[in-house]
Amino acid sequence: MQFQSRLLTAAIVSALAASATVHAAAAAVQATPQRLAAAAVRAQSLLNGPAAASVHRAGADAFVARDTIVDANGTEHVRLERTYHGLPVIGGDFVLHTRNGQAQAVSQTLKTIARPSLVPTLSRDAAIVEAGNQFGPDFAGLPTARLVVYARGAAPVLAYEVSFSGTRKDQTPTDMHYFVDASNGRILEHYDTIETALPGPDQRGCTAPTPAVGTGKTLLLGDETINIVKCGLQYQMVDTTRGGGKTTNMGMTTLGMGTLVTGTSDIFGTNLNNTPSTVAADANVGVAATWDYYKNVHGRNGIANDGRGALSRVHFGVFYANAFWNDACFCMTFGDGDGGTLNPLVALDIAGHEMSHGVMARTANLTYSGESGGLNEANSDIFGTMVEFYVNSSKNPPNYMIGEKVYKDNPDGTKALRYMFKPSLDKKSPDCYSADIGNLDVHFSSGVANHFYYLLAEGAVVPDGFGAGTWANLTPASLVCNGNTAITGIGRDKAERIWYRAITTYMTSSTNYAGARAATLSAAADLYGGIGSPTYNTVAAAWSAVNVN
Ligand SMILES: [Zn+2]
View 1 (cartoon, rainbow, N blue to C red):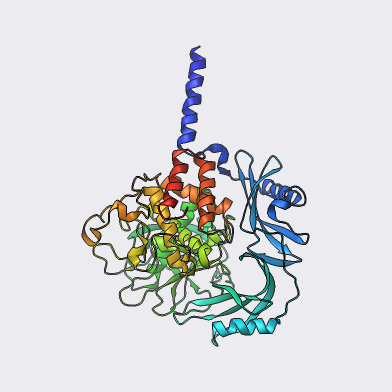
View 2 (view 1 turned 120 degrees about the vertical axis):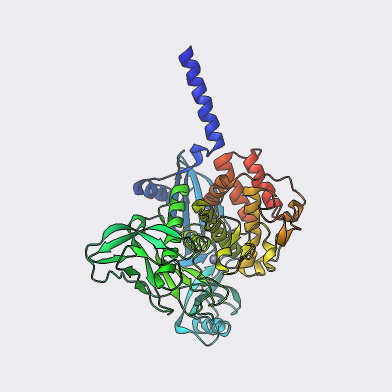
């Protein structure tokens, strides 16, 4: 009897624990490559049969699996890209959700089985001219063009994807992609990726490096332990504990992959920006923190989830006041600031932001324009901020501002690039959704999702330190768009898991704000219970509070 009641108690305790944390059945598990491959094969056979109609399969559609997630309860989520007669279908990607070999649901934005004629009226050269008129004369190398089916609009059309690369006035490399309607030359959409040459490993003749632990005397975080390697008499900034990620010094140039940061002792930097190694140490720490965050919070093994470390390039360009992720070289690049009011762009939230663009490219791959582009930017701000909270350094107290450490002179801590709790404080980002938001720059249309995330995690609460001083007029009512000041935050632990599951499992390349609401609700239902559960209801309320209904 006593034995039985103890069992019952244990069952109740574990049931409570499950509801208080993550529904174990719905959490993703680390599946073997064989298990993942089998799931992808099952998805393909469903797409040849019962699931064909639900993904609007046309006869000449074919699919390639790009990512697979398996939940503890056996539910499989296979992300696939689509071609039509061998042409890429832009916006035709989807996630097929299956259970016990049966299709359960599809996450997608494509709504039709219609496909365009594949005979272009516009020539390839004419398409390049149309795109070139927008790009301007300063391009490097030769523009390229390929035929695609552009399916991000209401009806799929045949288009040329034309890409022009070069360097912007601010030294940022640019790789513009234009979708040019192959029937009339109209530019349907354009976006920028950043592309440079592929890196070669720089081991400086070192054949047998051994892992070592050193000290990074950083500019922004004080002294931090860093993982490096020793080779002969030289220490090198290579982190073998995190996939062999390297940090290189660009020496104020913009081309190439830079020179591996090395030293003659295991101490890198001086805490002052008087030696190249200081900022290299900041970048190293930021990248390591982001790696650890994804690994320990989300079970993700590196940006690509393949255990491979990324390259970090510091001292890029002259007075370059930005940072960027470049998916082509799997590398992150940090500028030194403007030489005046701005520090080097190596703060934790910036490193987290840039690496999260890499994670995004390997998950939902939200297209970097329109509403999907704003969501892509918000994803980076959200995880950059969560990395800052994960590190929780007294030298860089975590908050919902982006890039506050970039400002040299920031006595009351209110200067920042972006403000998640009240995006309009940057004087450019809207607080609330409106139908024309997709016309804004992606760094401003991100504001609404940042705002949603803040309300979800923290509730309609004025952040500490901002109830007085600069923004004494901030009130709970001013933090919401619909007067609902009763939102109670679900906390960062739940919020970050919901967002991560949404981007890995439900969002696709053309997801818009309405789709993001649906994706996060699905994720919340998986992890914390469906309609009626407090967490689910708060996700809905937080979106409604930014006018996404
Ligand atoms: Zn970004």
